[in-house]
Amino acid sequence: MIFNLILAGLIGLCIGSFLNVVIYRLPRGQSLATPPSRCRNCGYLLRWYDNVPVLSWLFLRARCRSCGTAVSWQYPVVELITAALFLLVVWLTPIGPLVFARLVLVSILIALFGIDLEHQILPNAITLPGIVIGVLFSLIAPPGIKDSLIGVALGAGILYAIAGGYYLWRREEGMGMGDVKMLAMIGAFLGWKAVLVTLVLSSFSGATIGLLLMAVQRGTMKFALPFGTFLAIGAMIAMMAGDPLIAWYAGFF
Ligand SMILES: [Zn+2]
Image (cartoon, rainbow, N blue to C red; front, side, top):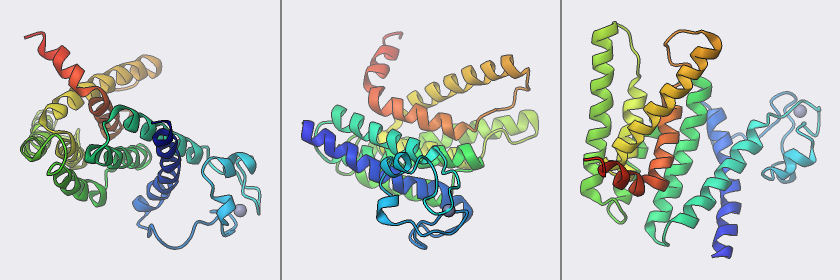
């Protein structure tokens, strides 16, 4: 088990490094494969030893080796968060295809979180293949194909209805189609029950943080943070702790 956890952490660091590339390049329409990583200021081509997750950033004191320009703390943070979540998944999940499904979903959610936070978009290039991958995994792993397909329909249906209702009420868009596709994807991976848990958790945390920000800034009712970031957090919690939460919630009826 210890060996599996160490391996999960190390693989998580490397995947996190790749997710940094996805978060930076995908919304800018750049290729993920080429060119190799360079300093954004001086164009210095990163050698393998400049690209070791977390360690290179620490060793170079968050600066480019060539020109000394600051390198964002976002890089090691994404790598460490990915490693921590990979550890958690491997620790909580029995060995089998479900582990891989969850690791893929975690990676996708981290990328969507980062991109939505910075650009307020949830690219189709991630969400649409994500739906297909989630459904395919459900052929060999929980929640099973039926729950997965209902999850896609319910995830898309609920948010589509909310988005439509909000538009009729306020005559402006409160929620994008990106959120609709993202929750459909979460449903594909986790099944329809987790869609409900995700929605409750993300709405609750979104409202809490929104109210806090309003109190601090005396701002408007507008979402201060994009909803996709809350969906990502809600889905992670639903995945790790969904079954006990559903049981607890069902206890009220
Ligand atoms: Zn440089």
